Amino acid sequence: MSGAHTPAWHAVPDAVEVAGQWRPADIRGLPATLRYGASLSGVALAAARGRPRKELLVDDLGPLFGSALEAAVDSVAAAVAAAVRQGAGKEIGVCAASHRGLLAGVTAIGALGLDCALVPASAGSEVLAAALADVDVVLVDDTTVAAVRAAAPHARAFDVIALAQRSPGRSLRSVPRPRKTGSLRLLTSGTTGTPKTTERGSAAFGQLATLLSLMRALDLRRDEPVVVAPPLSHGHGLLVLTAALVVGAPAALGQGRDGAGLIELIHSHAAGVLAVVPAQLAMVLDALEAEEAAGAPGSGLGSLRRIATGSAPLSAELAERTHRLLGEQLVDFYGSSEAGTATIATPEDLRDAPGTVGRPAAGVRIEIVDGEGTPLPAGEVGQVRITSPWRATSVTEQEVEVGDLGHLDESGRLFVHGRSDGVVVVGGHNVSIMRVHDWFVAQPGVSTAVVQVLPHPELGHELSVEVTGEADPADLAARALEELGSAAAPRRVERV
Image (tube, rainbow, N blue to C red):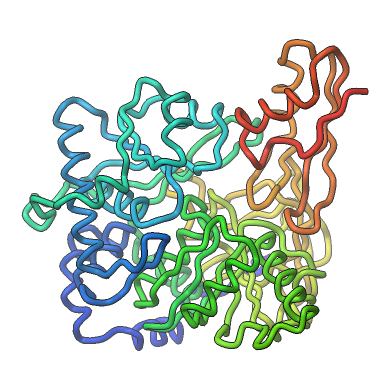
C-alpha cells in the first residue's frame, strides 16, 4: 500500500519500557482499571489507589497525593450524582483552569457512567453557549464561573475546587459499577467555525500500540516530575497528564505561566520532561536567552531531558533554536481532534529533516491524496489522510482527511503545508476565518470586514481585521475577545 505506515508490532519495545516503570504496589490500582477501563477515570483512580502516599500532581494549591485525589473524586462524584438524581441530564460540563479540580471532576463524571463535555477556560461566550446548550450542570472555578453563568444561564454551576475539598462521604468503591464508563468530549472547531465535540472513550486493545509509542516518545520516568504547560482541556495536555499517571511521574501543572515561570517550575521540581505548545516553548527560550544575557548564575535547564511539543505547528526555526540552546531534547507530535495523535518527530527527525512532523506512530498509516482520494507519490502535495486506531469514537470512518495539506518524503516523514479548509491555527487553536468574518459583519455599525492572517513567531499565526463603517474599532476588539475567545479574537482591528 502507498503512504507511510508503522506496524503495530513496533510498539513491543515500548510496552516493555512502560511495563518496567510499574512496581508491585501498583497492583492495588488494578481493580479501578478493570472497573472503568483504560479511560481517564480508570487511569486516575488506578494511580490514586495504587500510589496513595505518592505525589501525583502539583498545582497552585500544592502537591496532591493519591489518597487526596481519590477523596476529591469521591466528593465531586457525590455532588454530581445528587444533581442527576434531581433531574440533571447525563452529560456534565467542565469549564475550569488546569488544576486538581478539573482532574477530579472529569474522573468523577466518567466513573459515574456520565458523559463529560470539557470546554476550554479560554473559550468565548459564543463557543460556551453552543457547547453547554444541552448541559444542566457545569463544574467551574472562580476564573470561569461568571462567563459560564452568562453563556449558559439555564445550567447549575458548581465550584469544582470547593467540591474537591469537601469531606468525601461515600466512596465510589461502594457504588455499583456503571454499565459503561462515560465518554469524554473535547471541543474542537469545525470548518464553518461551529463548535463541535469529538468523543473519547476507553482505549481499546487495538489502540494500545499507538498509545505505547506515544508514551515511549515522551520518555516519562517513574518519580521524575514532568511539567505540563498546555491546558488540560487540550488533547496535548490531557495526553501527557494521562501518561504521567500511568507511569507514576508527578505532573506539575504550569498553564498560564510565562517563560520564566515555567523555568522556575522546572528547577523547583527538578523536572525531566517539559510538555508545551510551540508558543510556550518560544517563551521559555526567550527567558533562557535573557538569563544568559544578564549573566545569571546557573542559567539553563540542567535536569531537563525531553521537551514535547504539540497542538500547533513547530517551525523549523524554533526547532533549530531549541537544539542550539538545549541540545537534541525536542520531540513533536502531530494529529487532530478526530484522528488523535498520528505522527512523532524525534530529535533526529527534526535535525535531519527541518520542518517535518515526523513518521507515523505505531499502528498508524499516513497517506497524501488528491481531490478524488487517490494516493499521491512521495514529494507531491495533497490532502493528509490518516488511518488510526486512536481516532475519536465519534468518528465512524477508518480513514480521516483532517483538513491539512502536506507531503511525504522518501523516508516516510510528513511535512504539513497548512490548512485547506479556511481554518488557521493560532496558538494551538483551530480558528475559522469565515466565523471571524461573519461575526464582524454582523456587528452594528460595520459595513464590511476583511480578515487577514499574519505570521506570528510564537503563535504560528495571528488575525488582523479591517472594517468600514461607524463602529469603534476598540469596542469591536474588546467584544470580539469576549465573544469569540482569545484565539479567534484579532490582535488588531482597524477602520479603513
